[in-house]
Length: 468
Image 1 (cartoon, one colour):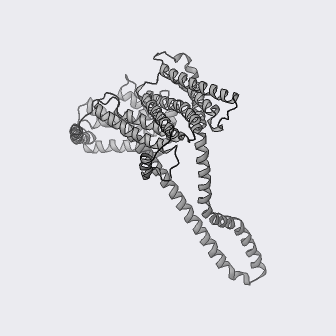
Image 2: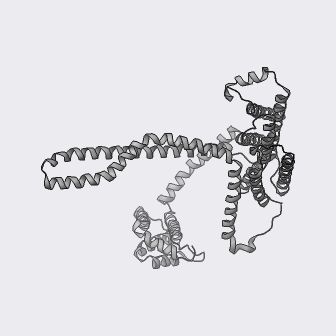
Image 3: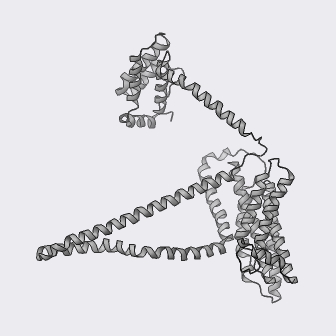
């Protein structure tokens, strides 16, 4: 639970850092004539830096390996950030733009844009590393909130001075919405930050449900609202693309929808007309088989398309769930400082477990068959059955008393319960080995007690029991 809470707090702090860095980039880069990096790219760079850092954090890797991993990730981030401000004709993954960038002569303004781009990349990368290295406690969260608030305040003062001097300000560089997202995420982070105190909070136990509901509402409003406001431009662009894609995908389904409407609404009218024609005209009977055949073909088409669409939806849901499990498995990491075991040790451990499993099979079969413990085995099954029915055995209760109590609650099973208790007393106290016929009879009694027809009585006993 604590790991999930810390992970959510890291995501919130990442949103705080990204909001003020992106706001400054959106303010400075258009002044020089360059477009800023997208907020999605900034979030991916933060996630890449944090993921690489968490990969080697606390695992005892050599510094050369750590520097190599960080250098590879940082190089990819630098290439992506340098690609964004300039208008390249090629795709990012083609690699031709990189050769053009390295060989082209640049002006002082372009060099300034490159330097600022490298600065934003370094700021995002260092912030992603600090998200993992620094524990998200109350003091760290407060320092990040103060730094972000100071950055927004300084930017607001600069924009006010520019407006006072008559200098136009880019509308995309205004920081109202991003400051609102930063403020909402910051309040949530300050409330979730741990200051190290372990205070007992059981004095308000009666309001546990209310506090859980209020906490969930605050989490959804602040966390969800902050992320939506922060990524609002990208979400609007994605909504427009999704709207166009939905229109294009729904266009082939329009004839099918029209056919369904005709089948639903015109089918009844055709039936009524056929009834009138059957009573008035004899020639209308010859059209009935063709109409029925057309209706059946249309119904077959609708059913085929419906089942096909349902199969596609189920397949997509299963594929998405599999991708989620794969990502969750890939993102899982062992606790810090845990000693790793070799593959041969794991295989030897599995082999020993398999040996113990094979050795336990004869003992289990002997217990079920019952050499001298058949009565005890049946009575143990009776105790588990009674506990599931809401009547567990009292510690100071004898088997005979427990059997009488069960038989009183389930009168129709009194004979079976009494026989199992008698067989147990005979095996344990009388030191008499039960024969195969008695063991088979006890097994039949247990099977009758687990029958479905006694489930309503067992559920009633479970609901009315005081030990539930």
